[in-house]
Image (cartoon, rainbow, N blue to C red; front, side):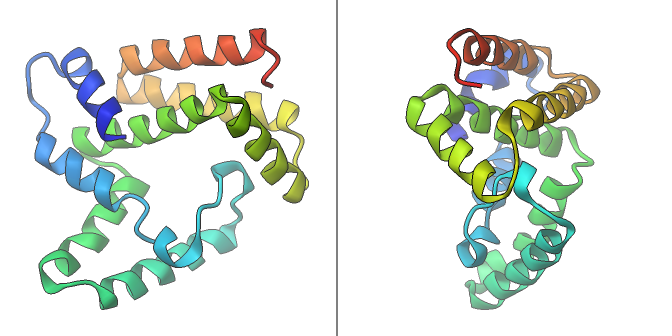
Length: 162
């Protein structure tokens, strides 16, 4: 995510208004709960996962050094419901990273396996998920990230990855 954020920052923020230090912190903290729970792809998450992740964040906070403790909940909340340009940018980069993962055959096989285990059909779930991501990118006004995502998505379709 850090590489992607660095790449897209000058494109999406040519006036240098983003607090990039906050973006870096958000990237570092965005999956803190997964230290306890492991990673679950978005389409396989249920309402139970939200509660499990909130408990996991509290557990990570309790185990963390004091200098980090105070920021974990705030940064986690910002990633879950971004209210700042930095939060929206970081959430978009997180979505993009997930799509790049799919470009590799191993990534597609893993996603298909997770979907099968969750009782999902990737050909049905994928367009629904992409429409939500595109709407999010439009709302956040991140046209370069959106165009890059569209290219990746077209390539996935063209090469039969979906």
